[in-house]
Length: 187
Image 1 (cartoon, rainbow, N blue to C red):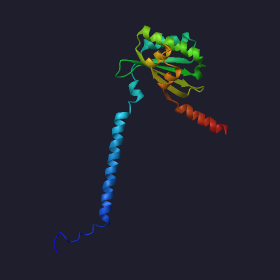
Image 2 (image 1 turned 180 degrees about the vertical axis):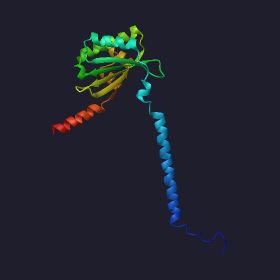
Image 3 (image 1 turned 180 degrees about the horizontal axis):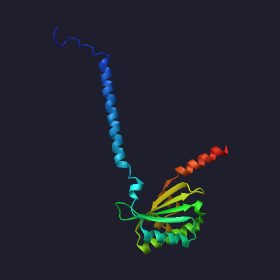
């Protein structure tokens, strides 16, 4: 019998198990590398790092004065530079535990216009706006944020309220959790 016609020896079960283990290890490696790549490219910096500069006292005082001018008790503003950018973020806290009762749509529109005026007249370079809404116990219920250009377009009648809201980020997790607790207590 020649070498070409001799039957090959059986490799057995162990060969299949070794190949399966190597394939599983390769698959895990691909998944880990994929997760690391996605995380590196698609996760933004932590908000505490981005908004951790020294507050702008002049812009903060001006916006707090605008809040007082509109009679918004329980509302406060803080303006902080955005790290690595030329702009600043205005963070408004609306706190029911400090007396905030809302202002209605007309009051909100008037305040938005005065915010835009204060920003342009004062040269405060506010490019982002966030609102932190706190409930009767002072706990955060929700946070919303948008860019200044969206607010300007809304205030100037260039976009509708729905279009403005579509360009607004919202964190409603605390509000939804409070709603779940309310629902559970009511049943």
